[in-house]
Image (tube, rainbow, N blue to C red; front, side, top):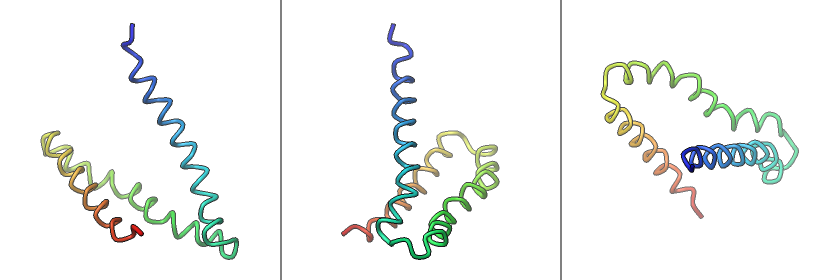
Length: 92
């Protein structure tokens, strides 16, 4: 009876968080930095994530093809932890 409930909860949570992210990505920089140079600022903020989205399939394909899945997930987890560690100095 509850077989699809986790998937439904995930889909709703993902949709809600994606909606909030979309709104915040456009309004938060305006609130923090003001309207001067807004379009240029949004472009500079979007550049790293857009480059990562463009490059990662090419970089990840050989890993996925040659390594076991558990190693691939461990490597991605390590990269995520390294990214998190880079954010820690920004904490106030």
